[in-house]
Length: 314
Ligand SMILES: [Zn+2]
Image (cartoon, rainbow, N blue to C red; front, side, top):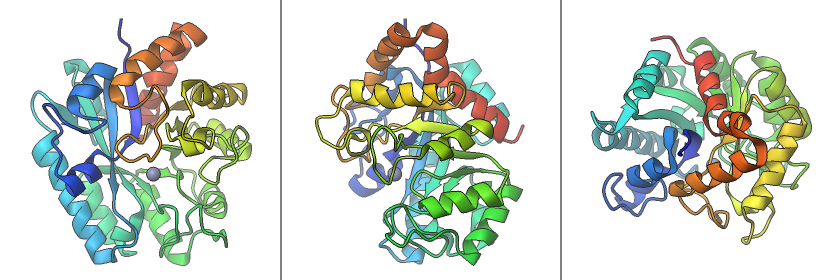
């Protein structure tokens, strides 16, 4: 019996844009259509990632190209449904199709201009992380040693994010930036692909304090399959990942936790979780370990609930 799965982060579009890969057919992508289907994935957030080393103009160009790939090559009548509202999601669910959502990872492409954010929202983008690992004009990323928070421009953009609305993704943000976001907005906050710092101390992982805030605010946390954040070595495996899941559950996160694999973007995927088809095996392990009801929440229902709270009705 296969279980439904939601995945809040994969770099499929970046891979396709950089390497020209196909989504359908016998594809090399770790999260190709075929592998997603084998894994039972019915909701996938497609990240719009561009190297922050590119100029802002070039970043915007890449984002537009990735949006075009999504609508031109991925969305289709028998494949992926483009989801920008709850009614889109509902239709995809009824049809048994994959719900595809779009989220920005690193907002250099915005050039600090709310007009560009609004235009991207109209093109279906429903989530945004302000930074990748480094600083940009909106905020510091989690690997900036000075640990700055949101800039003045970042605060202006955050107000626009709230107004639209869309979700704020704090996965790559600095601790000070996360604190600013938590202070400045009461809007939806999630971490699409991050783990627990108490289990493994990496700046990409979240502190207990932040995880508790996500729980209180009915946000969401997607555990990531990157070995460097799970246990700090390339041999990390599913058991190491489950220590993070156990920890979030211990903190009371059974309604807000799920997965954001980082397929097609991670540098060291966990042993046994090398591509999206492996969700099938992970699902079996979760059912065995936690029982069917909790396993289904973690695999799919929690993210579904988050989307229900965040997406506009239509
Ligand atoms: Zn990332």
